[in-house]
Amino acid sequence: MHERDFMDGTRGTMAVDWEERIDVQRLRRERKDRALERMREAGLGSMLLLSDPNVRYVTGLAMTGGSGADHYTLLTEEGEVVHWDTADHASNQRYNCPWLTDIRYACPGLGNVPRASGSASARRFLLETMADTVHDALDDHGLANEPMGIDVGHAGLHDAFTDRGVDVRPDECTAVMEDARKTKTRDEIECLRQVAAICEAGFQAIVDGTKPGRRESEIWGDAVRECWRHGAMVQGGYLTSGPNTWPKHQANTTDRTIRPGDLVYADFYNIGYLGYRSCYYRTFSVGAPTDAQKDAYETAVENLYAVLDRIEPGVTTDEIARAFPDMAGEHADYYDADEHWQLTTNHWAHGLGLQLYEVPLIWRGLSMDHPIEIEEGMTMAVETQEPADRQGVRVEEMVVVREDGVEVLSQWPVTEITEIEY
Image 1 (tube, rainbow, N blue to C red):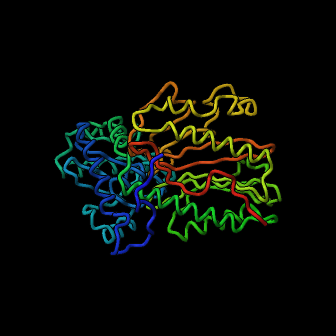
Image 2: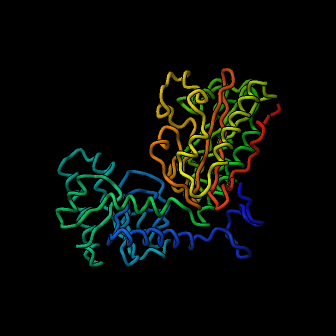
Image 3: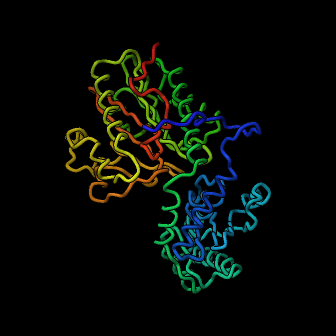
């Protein structure tokens, strides 16, 4: 395991002048430079980005999801950015985002706006207008005859650009953005450290608020409030208890009443800080855990750290995936499953960044036959689970790949199950 340097860690969310924290200007600059360098290497004159995480990566704008294609960005080979957004957003961005100098009004040719129009002619108008305005920007920068990457696979939009003489390259754009985003800068890593710390504040709220007679939803509400208080944007996550912990409850957090002897686990996934997403499980016992619960927890942690011990630069994902449980360890008979691909999300590792799932994905259902190489600077979450009688435990760590192994970003105690006294 990588040992962090003396001052590595979370220094706070406020802006101060007396120490260096997350440098958001550097964060924006280094991300855009990475995308630009790889775009040039791919022979693209520009890229049109419609995916929210890709837009944020290049612009720094807080894309939070929405109606779809009501904001999009063009990155040119000279490093210029043209951004289109809805009227209110665009007007605010012109005032609040001085690093963006060309902000135009979007015409949403994809997504909910054309879908809700109820008219084929309206949908055609929106799509054609969107293509026209992007083509105008290409002309403005002398790039109308150069290959343009695009990060969505929408045949109608591709055809609209082709009709205007644009050489559209979706595959190259996907590869460029994947390559740019798969390893993280120091500020991106610090964002993930920060969001891990925020999740730990949520875990503490769970410890403080869990007792027999309270409902899952009440306790989860306490945790969510705490995350928002620390500056997070909560766009996912849940808390379950008792028999809802095995298998994962289909409705996620419910109004089930907590009882003595319950296991409780919380999954802080898609908790975002400056857009960077968490995925962080911990399990708690309401009162002293039983022997079966302690044994299950010990197994889950051993499985988790067997995987972490294999992660280092240069190793391939098939080598790492072998440390995850086999079909017997997956308890596949419980699911009546025959192959690992049928057990998505049970035991795996996945990249973290501006999206919950980024490169790399490490999973017996995929990595054994389709391995990729691990690189220094990749960030990921590694998760395992284990049943305990009629309940179950889950644990997960957030890590960054260093030259000598992994640095664990998550710090809530993991060696033993957290016991909640009442």
